[in-house]
Image 1 (cartoon, rainbow, N blue to C red):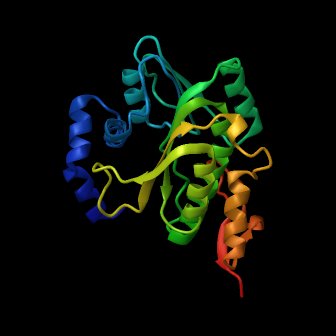
Image 2: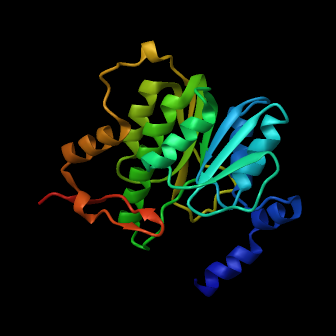
Image 3: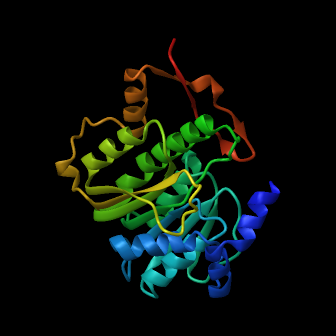
Length: 248
């Protein structure tokens, strides 16, 4: 951790505001700003928070859903308890974790999915960006079918290759898809939030449509990039995803 980053972190007004307001992370204000603009979460909603640690987005979600709502939150790392939030520890890309989520839902739909998920960073931007895209695709492919008609989905993703393919795939499934950069994001950050509203009914979506992950891989291949699946590893932080290279 550099001294410059540490000093900027200490002076960060959003960090200070979050601390004074009782939020566990400055990113809580990113969700609040997305909510103010797009009205993603309503009172009484069931919300799935993916990549919830340390809990800032879960805190905001439970405030917005109120006593009649439900918030299920999951992360690889455990969070301190949050009143009104059902916290899980697990990898949402693993089938065992997905089955547990389905059991918790008991066939009831989700109204909103919020994801501030981020991969374990390597410090190499091209690799980190590819991993971020891969991770987002896997989350979307599992979670979007759980949304009710008209439901919302928001996720963080690092800007770069594959984003346009994700946007196009999302537009097949939602009536409104937009990229948004909250004011609370750091100026130096490469992150962007993909906001998807009004999930379309299943009968309006082509049943032969390929998964979002496959759509991204196909577009990258068409652009002359190759996916190195053999680079995928599993460690204490879960799978790191794929890497992308220009084909020779």
